[in-house]
Amino acid sequence: MLNNNMEPKLIITTLPGKDKKCKAEILDRLLIKDENAQIDEIKQNVFLIYSKLSPLEAYGLIISAPPSCIGRIFTIDKISDLSNIFEDAEKLLSSKKFKKFYVECINRGNKQADCRSIEIGIGLRMKGKLEVDYKNPDYILFVNLIGNKVYLSIMRKGQEKVSVNSL
Image 1 (cartoon, rainbow, N blue to C red):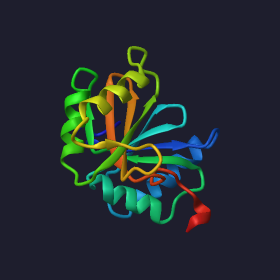
Image 2: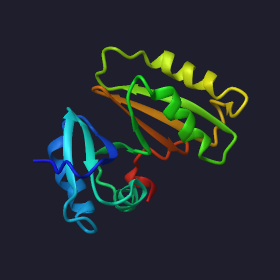
Image 3: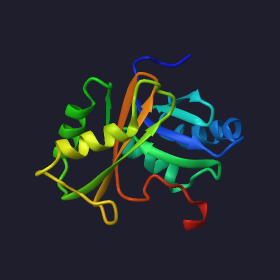
């Protein structure tokens, strides 16, 4: 049973067919610093990671010795919903010091949302404040739509990808 006092800190996707093995490997990495860490498979090959650690600490533990079964890993900087997504994205983007970004929306089963509209809407909302640059962004705002929740992550280009060979 998941502890309701903890908020999700990471979204992790696994390679096809590796979800069972990966769950144990991810927990092994997190239990070093957080004995209460928990994982919830919200959709096949998509996990929410609950921990008392900060998103960056949890990310660091996993990326320092990543399980080979992980596809992508996203820190969760803000949890929102569809009615507040543009305001929350603006606040999050405005809180960081950078000039160029773009939005990448990933719909993981939300039937009411249109990712393209969300990407364009956030870009338009930041017009005059930040420059949208797909080729050379300082950061990417990842918008993960899962159920009725919106998980916002600001990461550098390629930071969400996990490669065991790069270590």
